[in-house]
Image 1 (cartoon, rainbow, N blue to C red):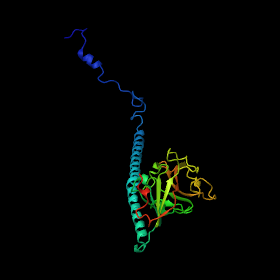
Image 2 (cartoon, helix red, strand yellow):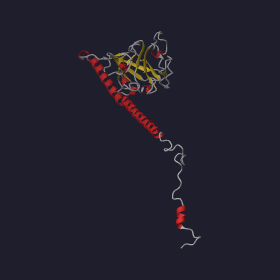
Image 3 (spheres, helix red, strand yellow):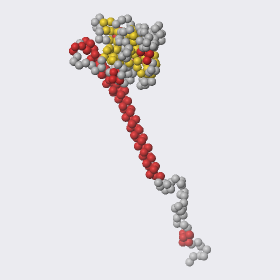
Image 4 (spheres, rainbow, N blue to C red):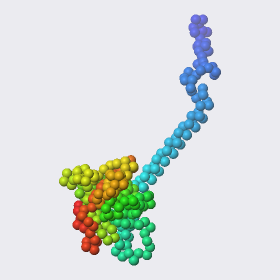
Length: 282
């Protein structure tokens, strides 16, 4: 029998709540109002947006990889293939010059000269084709059709790619004042010299006032005038060679121009079967 003032264990257990009181179902939850339970319709929308963003990112990444691979192919693989094709064209042109009647089929693109630049290597040689459109320049350096021919009074002007399509003029910026540029035709050797002061190395030191090298905008067509940098209507003052290419590398924003002047007169190939001494200048 228990004492009246003794607390009852049963009574204590009975009066102690077994569970904490839960908040009403229609009231705010203890945490943020933006909980999943509070906004059940937001989950599908968020999932769709996330998947869309992830898919777009993957597609952009794949596209970037494809573009990079294409550029690498153009700059290295296709460039090397084009360079070999240009070497083969030189071989065919020289074979035609030596024995013109032995070739059974004519060349698709006419080559009028072979360009040799010892500064760019003793084995540097490029066939100069007629014209400066895309098809012509894919074969090698191209002659501006309205300019003089090799050795003539006026300006024998030639364009070439600096990168891609064999990159025939990639190292054109390495030329220095006085460097020889040899132009070989079917029957004659012509030796041009880059304008400027070979002693000081300055391209602007030539007495003619024509710089040996300059960088111009793409619309500066006066660089291929009969006398470089003069109006096209002005009479030619000498026998010049002008080489043009894009500048800087991998950009067509400007043009790199090299001017040269004929050194003496042309020499018949019959007199120099092995070519002029300038071919062996380093």
